Image 1 (cartoon, rainbow over the protein chains, first blue to last red):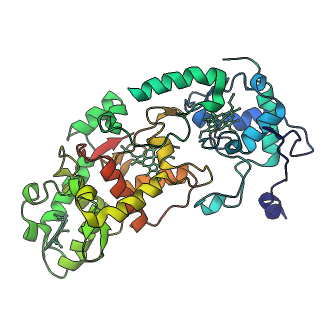
Image 2 (spheres, rainbow over the protein chains, first blue to last red):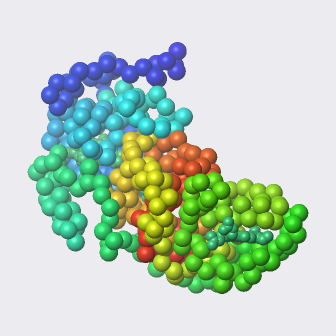
Length: 135
Length: 268
């Protein structure tokens, strides 16, 4: 039951450059989202991005600073950006966090699983919306 | 030069128009020869000093072990490496700089480790040492040390028979893989010099191998390093000694042609 739930991805609809509708019924929790973004093993975001995380000494510079993302993009745009970045920038290096197909040689432990669950995506999107201040 | 200008433009453009920033995506391409840098240049002065000074370089312990094994008669043939090859400073000089090399009996490239295993088995009639065993790392470090400072040869460029394997190594380097859907080139061609969560992304040259890695607190081969990167990409690794690794190693050697051998390197 749990394993099945893990493998099946929730359907979503892309409208222009956004996924307007949430992936889950439970509203995203920005606090939980912040913890996911700050964790280099879970969200992985800080491998590439910097952001307002004074407690995190090690951040990346392969991607733009996350500060202000909530002002630059609306909720639906942020959702598509996290779910499947490659639909926005074809050759991006940003992983598709909610996708399981079209990959090559995925390690067995990660096969058939998205990087983040639908609820985690909602949490991250809720957190990103709070980032209104530009760097 | 062009690259840093492109980066500057890219940074400026990123503020206004993030989506059209070219250098961070699809910018795959080889690093111009005169812009290639060993990871050595990214290391802190104390770590560099450790590599440079044989008495401080922990890899020296493996080199000395390898030298002892080189002299020792062993296997059913009762022969030492030295019995056939004599003084390694002469006979093994430059050998590491031209591996992987084409091996006629298997009809494909083999790496230096495999070359040593073959002599152990076929010439000394001894059991094959396992990949990453102390014995094989010691012998490889000792043989590779004899090429320190010598330029990596363009073996694949010179030997037609290696061409298809070079191409397969290149394809593997450029192929997106794993759950993170990244290619080796995404990091080592397109984003070297940048910070991946505080770690400088190197160009990924094979010049120092086998290396003493401070994080491992031990010696490791190039294949161990490649496995580490693949695990980071959440990609399925190959078994040690797999032809896929050797093809990648061949491509890495071609990419680093002309750069000096540093073995045994020290890495953080």
